[in-house]
View 1: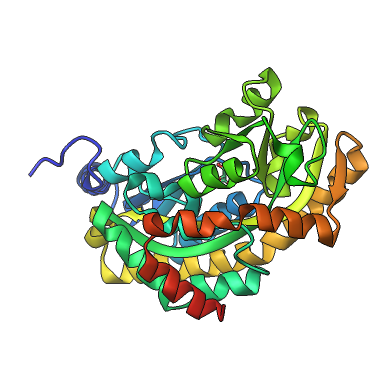
View 2: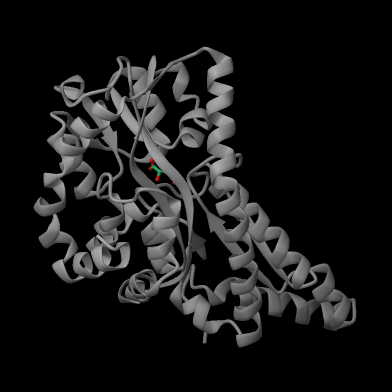
Length: 343
Ligand code: LMR
């Protein structure tokens, strides 16, 4: 059976065919496979390499290739080189790419609005609270739901908490009035910006810096590691350390490819991924802290901390979003969430 173009079998069959050719024509099969990987996994993402996600993807590549003795190759495509926010999910669903690690904010628009619970502002006090969800039964149930969209959910990892930036300090809700704020394509984030009096503008990550530079948008929200590695400090005069929301990721595979792999290879890949995600979670704090230090030393943007009173004002302003989006996310998910968080 000839696999459809871009079908995940395509690259595997091509390798086997090549290995077979190598065996028949020139070399014993063993050495042919040693010279050439039998399986190539294409891992695409939208951020820079010096970010928690960039480092996780490269660590995963190293571990898989080492542990498979080169039989399984991982090709990593950072910075939206291969696919970006607009087309990566569809590319994964049709098998044009094998692995992604999109932000949890990006699953709502492919029919999984329950993932937008992670976008609820001021929901998590710290990363331990996040991990009570991602490493607990609720997190696993969310990953299983990905199968509805032909995806296999393999695990979560953090970037960290988001900060607000613009060309003025954003310390209180009144500072947001009238600003066009870039967001990820999440209805919870759109409601959050509207609750602050701003106008939400959903744009792909790879277009954000240019949109800030050209004035298409006035500001945005992101963890410091993304802000720094995208040079947003050169087009935003003020960064306000609001810690108002969480940014995390789920690693997802094309389901047909995943089911096609042998149980041994699935285990090898899954274990390497868990090790890489553990590493990434350690990196999350470090990379954001390092970026903040670098920003302070660069003197390219003013960095503002909020007083407790200012933080309370902002929390009050966005609190109604939790109720407003409850129907979209699903009250059963929210019920389980607040029980898991002990709220
Ligand atoms: C964003 O679009 O702001 C982030 O999801 C980018 C990323 O993947 O960290």
